[in-house]
Length: 106
Image (cartoon, rainbow, N blue to C red; front, side, top):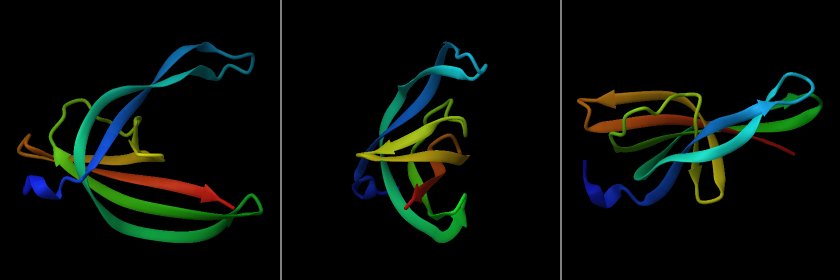
């Protein structure tokens, strides 16, 4: 992998629960698990209607150096854009590809 193409400094965050609310849902905060340089490639985009709102779904693949422990329960933060991680694949424990998705409502 050409290191010059890794032009996006991103944080991988995990949710750390600190308790439960009255409804039994976990409450807590997102904390940085790892930071690294990645290359972003657009994969797909779509629009639809969900709960009477127009929703746009954007999917990218971020590729970077291998980092152990990244799972689909985490999220990726690229500057101010926050993406849910939906898939993680690794090649020879050297390169990691993270597929992310973000849904925006209008």
